[in-house]
Image 1 (cartoon, rainbow, N blue to C red):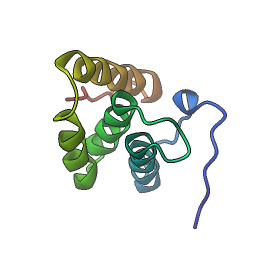
Image 2 (image 1 turned 90 degrees about the horizontal axis):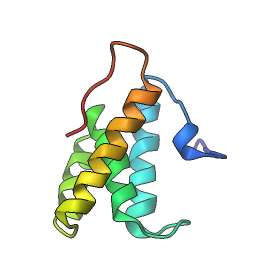
Image 3 (image 1 turned 30 degrees about the vertical axis):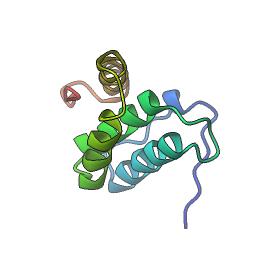
Image 4 (image 1 turned 90 degrees about the vertical axis):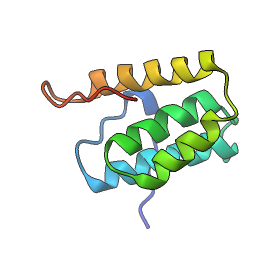
Amino acid sequence: MARFEFASVDAATLGETALAEDVFFQLGMMYSTGSTVAADYVTAHKWFNIAATRGNQDAARLRREIAAQMSDAEIAAAQRAARDWLRGNHPVGLDRAAA
């Protein structure tokens, strides 16, 4: 099993691999459950959203589940964070708007 450590998760760039999808999904799990980090649904939604843009159906499902527990303002903040992260971490032309 691989282990990933990030000095700054927001600065991490993992490229376009299936591995990246799994890492983003695991980050969503960490923040949604409060595992090793403080629970934060906005950040969890962001990471699930990024994993979902790469085709992870579980991430899309869990993003919907936590969104049901979030305010509209929190969802909007999470969507902005995902879009900002994608813009800053994708090569030009690969940006996909986060939903």
